[in-house]
Length: 396
Image (cartoon, rainbow, N blue to C red):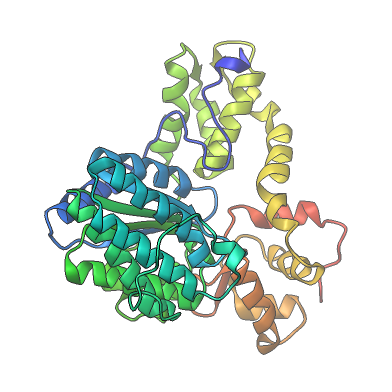
């Protein structure tokens, strides 16, 4: 069939043609925005889930809901090479200028920009990093101590007060939140705590890996009282099949029941994989009914594309020792795995695994679903590791 009209969109953060199975989460976000506008207490939201479940797609969809509710938004993606201050500064600057254009707020916006200038001046990482074009004198004594836990709440207060003066709210959206340091996560939690205490119109919607609730709780024990942690998982069978059947029906195309069954079986309901299977099945089919034979015929193509575009970009960030460790985990099959079993197959004791395990958790490759267990953060990664390192002997 015509590849130009293919409705499926495999890609990092690419919106699917049909967003199914997430209605309750979007309703939750809408309620959050509307309650905060009315100065009613409501928890901000940190979505957690494995890679490929559509967290980034949901962040973008929630951003649209925030805009519909009259909020001004700023969206960020955390990563290992940038501090929280570096991450936030350009977006907050743009947001404050947007507020000024919207309402000509003058004093409130100038105060926000002056606090931002002082905040950046107190962070000692390198002047060139923070040269974001603020031709304004810093406001001395507010958010300029150099202590992130003290300064970030002051900065957020100044930004939220400017928004409040303009009759609007602010929604900050942060992807890959697990890459923040413990100090940064603690400062962010404290800043949002102050927003709730002062009933200021700023909300945080973030997303990251399943280790986040533990990280947040370790940073501040009251984090669970400030945030909801909705878990984003694979789609149930009916919704996974709708994600395939509904988009093609609009083009007069259908999947046979057997084809839908097979795609659900091999994808296990993970949205990214569903999009890849749908995309290749559409392109390969020569008739408007995509059948089981077509789905099976594209398997090699799909697996190669997933290996190249989804799995290997993470595999290539690993050291040889880290790769061997993950290959040992993969030998155990599908997780979660007991730490003792991983240690045994890797031929070391539990204690010796500590530094290596910590590095892999920091890189976002594994997490601990419960005490004494490990699992991959990437669905089906164990099968990829066996394909990628089938020539490597497993440690014994």
